[in-house]
Length: 192
Image (tube, rainbow, N blue to C red):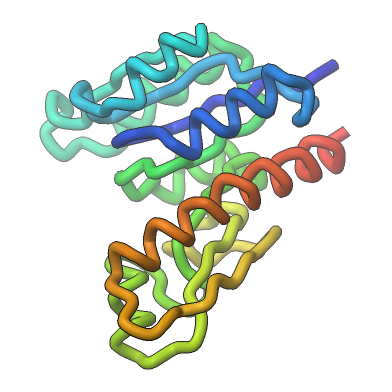
C-alpha cells in the first residue's frame, strides 16, 4: 500500500511541485494527498491545485501565538487524510516538540546547507562569508532540535568565484529538487 504524504509549504513550493510530480509519475511509491500552507499568499497553493492535490491553508495568525492550537488544527487534518509521512518543503514555522513527538520519524525536511553547518536562515550568505568552497543541501529527519535530525542525504554545490547568495541559492535549489525526490523514494521503501 503506497504511503500517503503531506507536504508543508510557506512559499513558492518548487520542492513540493517536484515531489508531487515524482509521486504522480511513479518515481516515488507514494501518494501526495494534501498540501498544507501556513500562508494564504503562498504561490505554491495554486501550483498544488494545478497538480490536483488538495491545498489547505492553516494560517498561524488567528491562533495569536498559541502554537499548540495551531498544530492541533494541522494534526487533525493530517489524521483526517490518513497521512503517513510529512515533507517540509519551505515551511517557515518551527514545529514544537509535542507535534514532532506525535509524528516521530515521519517528518522530513530539506535544508539549504551541508548540515551540521549553517542551521537556520541565510545559509548561502553564511557559507560565502566563511569562505567555504562548497554550499549544498541536506534532507534530514525532523527532531526537536532545529535542523539537527539524522541526515538522510546531502549534495554539495561548488561555490564559484564572484558568487552571490542568490547565485548559490539558485544552483542549490536545483540540487534540492533531485535530492529530496531521491531521499523520499528511499525513505518510503524503508518504511515498509
